Image (cartoon, rainbow, N blue to C red; front, side):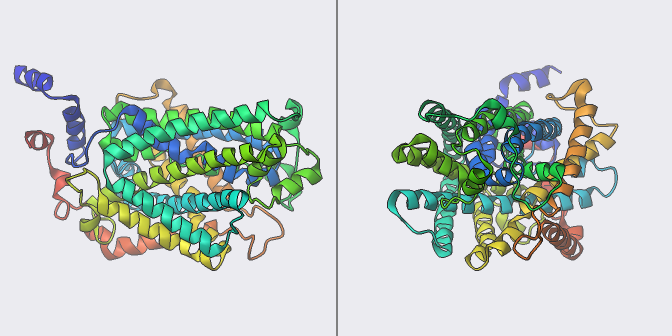
Length: 515
């Protein structure tokens, strides 16, 4: 007992994290240099209220209007917070870069490897699709800014080229290691907070007129073609749900975070909570600044030549093109940081998935660069796949949407599966961060909500249904499940999480601490 006490007092905190990781079967290979704030900043940057609220604003504007925007955001946020809380509790018990798939494997009573495998593939491909969507959205926004500022005409080729430039830049930045990523994540968090405050301040100080609170919360606008109002409102919730993604990043960088058992779950929860509050203030301010609140005015706003209704609100409300362009510049910066954080989280998940022999070529993708303490090969794997996923946009934007439609639905399937398994596991012993007596209520609310939004995401958002308006999400989900099934039969059942192929899974904590 005295020896253990002496070892504990002489061992720095990071070794405690390494011991926890060793008990889960993994050796500490990544550089553990992130603070709790940096962990939070990665997830907060991927959610990115400045990027998500601005680029997806039109979804709710045409499907319910101001009512769907300002009532839908906190409504969806409350349920998403339940998902985040339930995920965080599991993360505290299993703080690994693998995150969701590892949790599923540990929590499943039977067929553990199969549960982990399918959750992992939904998580991996969902994250790659999100990364592609973030960068393509950033390219669209930046070209809109260039068009307003310098008259640059956006084209599919120009958008794709800028997309590639941006994602390659972030691949390089991530390659320089966790210290630079941690620093830029901190900068990103403050960029989002200060940037949102600047936009909100400008929208309340400079315009000569604002809409009333009653109008901002209750005004109705419908361009979907559907006449059933509850259905239209539910479709408007997709704006918020598209934005509330990526907070699993705090789990994926857990092996690089100090005191991960508490810092990572806090990062998950706080990134969602701060986004709910900040996003609501931002959305209310943008909506209240709409100058023409008539139905015709909202239709015109939705079809703005800028391609971004909030950008048009800036131009109309501020009566100062220079200030409007500056606010759009803040949004562009937020999307830049959002993309960087997405590559970081995506690469860590793929690194973890590879060290368990899931991805073809796993030995290459699971390598960690000892000089920078980062999985550089995995970084470029994610960059390369994202470019491939976005390539259809060169020829057909609908085809691109079909590919990236897996992003949100795939991620939420991966999010809720370990939460469900945790609820079914009566032997689960919580980690240091837990929900106590509220765990069952919050967990089941999370499960029901995700089932609801998954159904919502596969329904047709507009009518009439054509080739261009068809919802390709069900096809994308089936395609991912089929791919995962084929890969499981061809290689996964032989090599995935196999002690023979991945000896680090059997390494004991004592051995790792000795090293």
